[in-house]
Length: 189
Image (cartoon, rainbow, N blue to C red; front, side, top):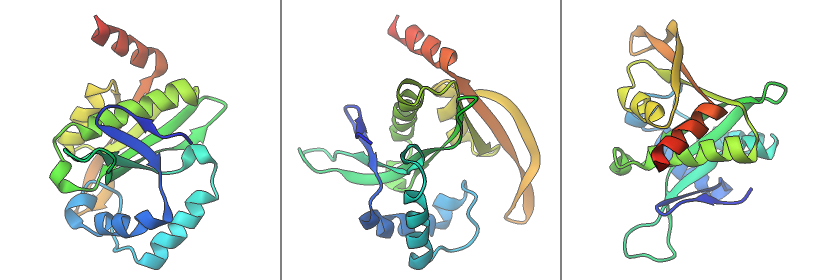
């Protein structure tokens, strides 16, 4: 898969060398608070996950979100991951997910930019009609990003996930290709 990029970020294929960085992120309680991960992940488990991921079609492979630090022309540093998965090719629909693992880069627009690139890839390259996601209803920061890039609220899976001693709702959101295109046209005016 080609590298997807804009001025500040690029999305590239995940490599085996990224496993160490991934382990730091997915074993950080603050980062996984908004993910469906409840157990620590070992290096062996992460290596098995990586091997399993490579056995899937390329369209479902995880991509690493990288940024170019100021004053460094050719250097990039990984700050998170994103992925399109759960493809339904007959209906041209898929699920999308993102994680900004480097907390020092939260709230700086990198999640929004990554979602925009991933949506562009999903609609223009993969010819999807509908891209959807699930998000904890109390994850206001993520919901704001998803709304900003065009996702609409579809419904709620009530008390669908148990974490920290109570049940939380999961919000279902989606964006259709024509809605995404209309949003691009509005921004160009």
